View (tube, rainbow, N blue to C red):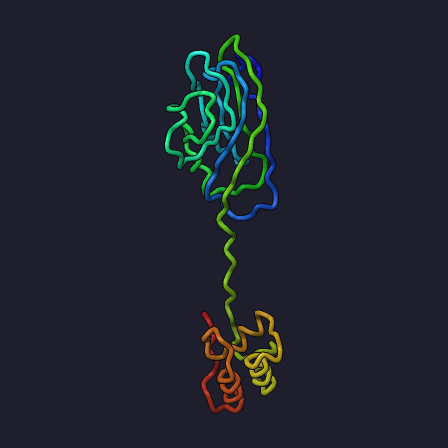
Length: 211
């Protein structure tokens, strides 16, 4: 980390891929060896440019090092209340909750700079922990209940397919199972097959369509 170089930051990057959904929680851990940690300003930057202050100008006389220092909004004490080498878990000066609801994919940067002369140090490593809210799976909406074979009309073939689904002799696709549920109960039964057949004969009510 360059000496007396703020606001020019020494960055290190973790690239996140294949992590869909939105962020529910962020924690970060790093190790930095420095002979006077009160010189250091350290931030975490998300891929969209959101910047959170982790620690700036903390440490007393000749305090040295951040060693496996974890930043977590839920920690019992703030980094401003700790003592070097700051091993353990602390609340950052900013709020990691600022990242909640954002996407995770892209380049995350740990930004470090030294804002005073003489004492020097170097960055060793860091870890980023992202807890995600899952991507919601849309619930299929069934139109054309009863038309199991999807040919645009109700027929005895639809009734037979619904009965076969009900007794387990065929494994339906999601669309077929949805269409075979004539009464909209979310369960395919022999009664659904009977309702479809009665509709074909014009002797029953039409199958339920979802709006």
